[in-house]
Every structure is written in structure tokens, then in C-alpha cells.
Image (cartoon, rainbow, N blue to C red; front, side):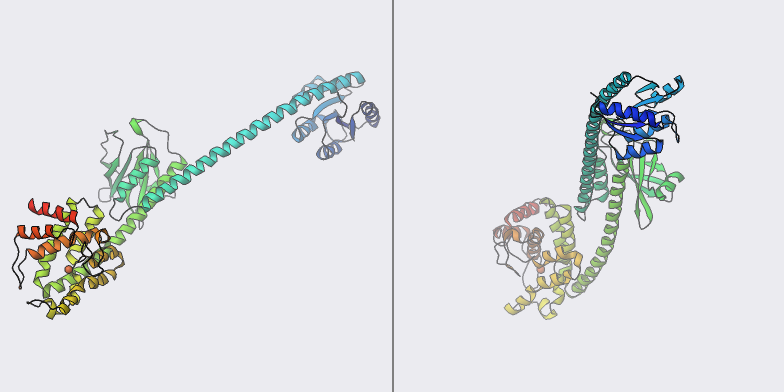
Length: 488
Ligand SMILES: [Fe+2]
């Protein structure tokens, strides 16, 4: 049973080494010899040993102190101690360190064989156990890696979700609404509130909330503590107090508001505290929201500048042609009302609000002799007038942010059947806003007195609109307009 075992003999007594070598070789063991502790350690690092027969008293070290090194190298190596002195303390110490047995010199070979057989058997069991533990350890490692991988995928998905939600924001969507919705989703339904900073009163004012109906919340105004500002200004950039985490929205270094997330979740259930990844996602959301708001502010200031310039142009036209001013105001008003009935979205409504007053801005390029001509226009003159829609588009295109509005101005004289100008496009190819303006523009022209003809009555004008539905006008829009006018 001990045949084939690789055995290291460690003893400074050469005679004992020789006797043991002869005996064990006869029993089929492969023998390695060391006369000092140092030699023993060298052999251990080079050879794949199975049993060490170790003398307690070595010239350089205490044999017992070698047990640790042997077990570190390979915990399955069996260690049999041999000594000339019977000292129970030594035996206990050696056993504690992991020795398998202790033989007192001189010992009988039979006894050694029995001990070695036991060591070999124990070693086999230890190897089996180690294999099992390794497999278990590998399984645990794989499970851990899988869990980490799942977590990373989840994190990436959430980051993508957050970015996507912000990137898909329309210019007229409410950033604060979107922000607290995203937080509510990412934080698994925890209550979320957004407060505006009131620097004058050193208070936070509640602006938006999403609370899953937990209710009972009276903190519409809350004090800005020094601690909150200190933590928010620190590198941490968040502050946790009781069940709440506070994160600032910072624009150009100014703290404009705070997102406050409560640990209270769905059905009033308290969730665990905020983890590092919770804080990471909350920071991502507040940073994205801050950037959106900053861009929005920049856009609005640009937009206002552009509208101011366009208004100046309209004033210039109005000075030449008084009809245009009131006409544009009425067209804007009716277009917005019609848009409302047609349930256009907020963005389209805002485009109508911009386009309405300036839809004829291109007339700025029409000579007075034609624009203000009291009589009927010649075909050539009419062609010049028709150019106002393209000229209007060119003016709007100077302002990059008004490209959508520019298209609508280009097409406000297109006809549903394709016989309009400037492009002769048909049906839904014509932007819906342009189709709305076309109806309101024509109606207003019909019910207004002009130098060359009298105004039609409301009823006559509506009849005309209905008569031209499907040819000049979008039939649905024309019907809706007729309903609207009838109900005024
Ligand atoms: Fe026009």
C-alpha cells in the first residue's frame, strides 16, 4: 500500500537515514534525503513529495517549525515526526501543526509501516476532499463571476435607459417630469421629489413629486441646512439624512435645486439604504438633467433673440401693409384653436405659435408696387407674390433652430391635390401645420374686405372651405375647421 510513495527523510543522523532508505526502498518507496531543515525545504519546492519523515532535532532548525512550511507547500503531505526523547509537549505541538504521527526512536519497522499505511490512506481522503473543495470553490467563483456579470449588464442597461430617456426628450417636454420619472423607475419605485432652491429664505420649495400614493407628506418647504450645502459642495455631491438622499442640480456652478429620494418604496414599504450603485445612477440622472436644463436655457435665449428679429421684420412689413398685421394675428389665433381641436401635440402647437405671425415674412421681399397694388394683379405680378413663401423659408433658414418652421412657411400655399406652390406636393406630404395654416389663411382672407373685393360672410366662407376640401384643403382639417367656426 505504501509502494510507489515519494518519501522525504529528514534527519541529521546519516546512519538512521541509510537504514530507513534501505528498508523503505525494499518496500517500493522512492526516497529523498535531507540532513538539515534548509535542504528539506529545497527538496520540498522541487519535488512532488507525499510523506515526510521528520526528525525533531535538526542542526539548523527545530523540525516542528518545518511542519508549517510543508503544509503551506501542500496540505496533503503526510508528516511523521521521529525523536529520541519522549516529550508530551512536543507531541501535542506537532499534532496541532498537522503532523500525522509521532514515533520515538528506536522504533520498529512494522510500526513505521503501519503508520505510513495510515498516512497514505488519510492522504487519499485529503486529496479527495481537496478536489471536492476545489470544485466547490470553482463553482462558487463561477457563480460569483456570473453574478458580477449580471450586475454589470444590469448597470449598463440602466445607464443606457437613463441616457436614452434624456436624449429622446423633445424640446418642449418637461425635464423635471422626465427626471423624477426616471429616478422612480431606476430606484425601483422609491418616492422622489424635486425642490427648487430659494436662496433668499434659505429654503427648498417642492416643485415636482412622484410618490406612489404614499401621501402624508407635508414638507413642501424645508430648511437648507449648513450640513446639506457642505456635503453637496464636497466631492461626494450628495447628502444622506435619515431615510433620504439629497442630490443637487448644478447649472454654471449654481445650485438650482435638489432631488430628494426617500427610501420608502411602493406600498409605503421601506427599502434598504442607498447602495453605491443607487448613488451612481442618481448622480448620472441629476447630471444629465442639469445638462438638459442648461441646453434648454441656452436654446430659449437664442430662440427669443430670433423671435425678436423676426418680429422686427414683421413690423417692417406691417408698416407697408396694414392688412398683414391683423391678418397674421387672426391666422395665428385660429390655427392654434384648430390645432387644439385636431389634438396636435405641444411641440406642433408651439411651431404654429411661431409660424402663424410670420408665415408671410417673405413678403418683405415683394416690391411695394406689387404688394400694395389696389387693383387685380397680372400673372407676372402674381408670380412675384407667390415667391414670398420660398423667400420666407430662406429668411427662416438663416436661423438654424427654426428649420421645422421654415418648412412650414415654404409650404403654406401648397394644395392638397398638388396644384399649389412652390413644390406642388400633395396630401400628407404637406406638413400638417402648413395644411392647418392654409385653411385659416384662406378663410381669413375671404372674410376680410380687400380694396379689390368685398368680404364674404362667415357662412359663405365656410361653404367655400368645404367646397374646396380634398382639392385645396385637407378634408379632415377642413371639416374640423367648419365645425369649429359653426360653434363659435
Ligand atoms: Fe402667404
